[in-house]
Length: 599
Image (cartoon, rainbow, N blue to C red; front, side, top):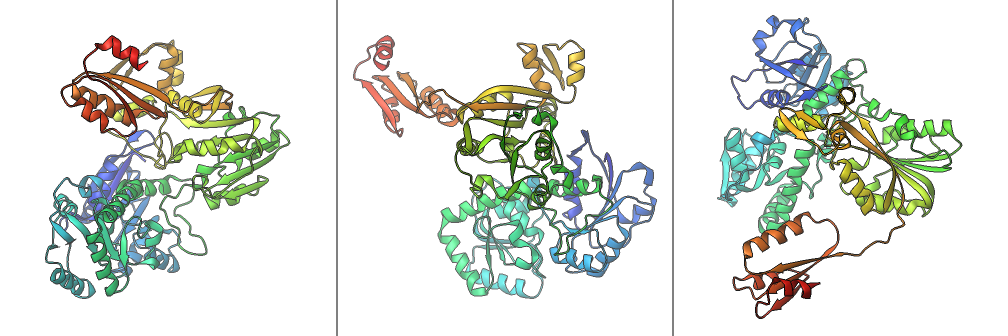
């Protein structure tokens, strides 16, 4: 998918959804290449050359009426099914792939025969809608059109009760500036729709207060009280406003989590990735929906994402292992290979229920649940081998999970892991170009929340009580060519000249991932490390040193300071540090004496 024509009208409304889609596509890489995207107005669509593009993407602008038959393959994102359903239906029937921003709209399209319809909610553009550094000016803010009805009535009441409220029109960055300067972003949908204001308000970093829409799928996107606040009745609205205006800490905490959530899952880049994943999948045109309702494309993985047998991982699993547990077993392909090779009981843990259903037909037992949330548990010393293949990078606290799994291993058992290498030259090349582009799979999978290099993998295993027995490197793009050229130690990456210390270090830039087999560590565990610091004046340097330790030292430690009669406030600063031991000399004995005393 190298060239995409995007069709929408932005003459009447510059802030139309198509603008954000075009921006997102223009920053994306697909199959290792930057996407070429070109914008056309609807009245230009009959004259777009079909052979110049790989996809024709039509974005609802309130005006589009027709998809020319020669523009194939075509995708249609309907935004206003709650306002102009018949027009959306007509377009959907002409498109190869159809998406609806409103969940009820997707369900209705399907019921009217558009079997390829799926729910793709609206989103935010962090560069335009993101949080701005500004002073708080307003208690509440509403940016947009009033429209006669419940929205207008409530806004008039809000402004009467809370005069320090902004109501009016602002566009793009000015809207983000207004929201960022407000304690609460108020929203009221027109027709039970999850509108753009929901995502834009969350992205601004202020608390979103919106009407409750469970039937529209609101609860599937965000957690009430965790990411945002909602109201059902008018009396509840006033109670929520009063509460959050008088509880700053709680309001800011929810607003922060809401912003993190929308940036993680609900940007226009995520939406464009979903559309491209659907179009480039091996399935026939359209995402077919389950019988019990509409399929959400949020966080959805293509089915083949879970269908990998991983022979490279299989090689590290001892053939003598009789009881094996795979964390993140997907559809059970690896486990099936194990059972085919050797007599063994193989259990799996899988978060995705659909993949788990497939795995249950291949493994002895499959447990559906979140390993990080403690939803699955086993007795101690239960397994000869535990596998974490392409799992740990998806966890917020992989160290805690490894410590948990450690207890489930038999004393002579082993841990097998597979982790991607963020030091890979393709990631560095993109970073040097100013990009950190998440994709549906790969080194920068959009679900990755932790990133590792070879050294960080070794450190993670050591810190959690494992000793690496074997580590294998899986080469990525350019590795074979590098080996063929003699494995040079000097590399050129996007014009950056890198001189490594050895061929082994140079190889790390071509490593796609590292596979390890580890055993339980027999070495003693140390409670903490003592860090002894000698000080004499130069307070600012001492501050920098301490802040660096606090920020970057992830091992348990204690701080011990030896101060030699500093006269610039150093001693007072040291005494302000929590849990630090301070030895202060009344007169300067000289650094050698201080070092001896400290030791």
